[in-house]
Length: 307
Image (cartoon, helix red, strand yellow):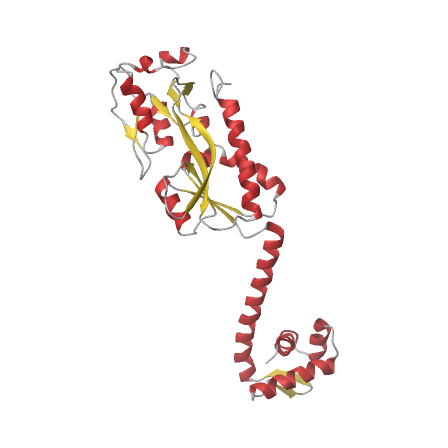
């Protein structure tokens, strides 16, 4: 059973005549009839009856046609897949990112990426740190964007930047008048506690305050930056917190200031170990790195995020 025989049969079924099938296949009508005859010999059953000068499919032909259609649908899917690889450098680019990064630098990076990869599909999954690690280890995502992972099997990572935490407060707080916040400024304040998540903790932030030997409260804790900023927007606490999620909250009653001494954490783009990067992924990583650098340059001035 040859592909050309199946193609002839399919075209006759679809058009109703060998003449129209021949036009589609760019061959003669006798050539189509010969291909159908050869297929009938191979199958050992008749495919068409001629009734009043017209070809009428036999019951066997109708059943066989269902299988032939499924076969050609599979071929079409392979052709579409090949076309997508040619035009996009692969299928959809799957990105897993923490909530803060997915609403911080990621949208701007995707906007620039889309300008040069207009046919590329991008799928963004917002996930916690531990879930991103699992996605990478099980090859369910192409890129993971988060703070640095510990030494986990199955994950390779490239540093994007070492990013300093900032001090965030409600716009009515007296500390908004200062250009830079220090540990001593937080004496007696209610400082938001950033809770550990999986293998990631924020001990350095807590250690800076402990080493300053100041008295402060910590009535509220959360693992989520956006939840933390929401608490700050309600004037419930002051936060020493990552800056990526700050932008929308600075339009909703939150003011952020640099904090000294700097408390820096590395942020990375991670990939599944031993999996070659597609051209799309390489292009996106280059764009993302540039946007992280721009974010640092624009936002780590004396009064970041202020217009």
